[in-house]
Length: 217
Image (cartoon, rainbow, N blue to C red):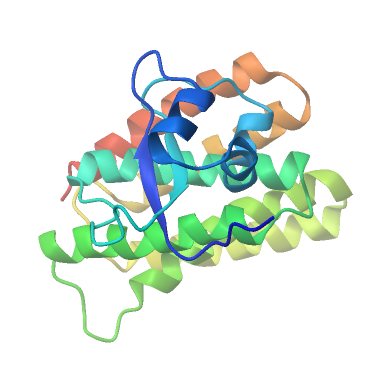
């Protein structure tokens, strides 16, 4: 493939758009779109869905995206979902699925830091990435069906919640974060059990929870 990943931006699917019309509009091949968005191999494209699109020379001077906090939180949830589905269905597909989420973290941090004061020494980027890794690791817990693995995961989750409890985040308290974590785990279980309709209902709940948390900022 002659195309090479340099910089990605987040594109929001518009009503009645298809992969083909998006490819034509953004001047990128369908194969490349599928490569950067493996979620499309297991789900139907719909309006409002964020896609990873390479910046080309035509728009290379544009900012990738500037969004208000609630919208940014929702798109962040979609990127986590994409990475989860990638790991469940395409285990060897890691880099291209993980990089957009990593890039999104920096935007999320800017949004949070703009609206709240954090101790200078506090590494909020690290705690967000630990949260995401904890969710991804739960896939291995389900696959292994091992009590020791489950116990270890519970301990790391407890440590993560303790880290969140040290923050003064208004409505985004530890209880809300813990509820989102449990919903992500339930989403994983449903997807790995091929109960996709139930999994999508759970993800809808997660979206609403992300919006509620964003209102703290």
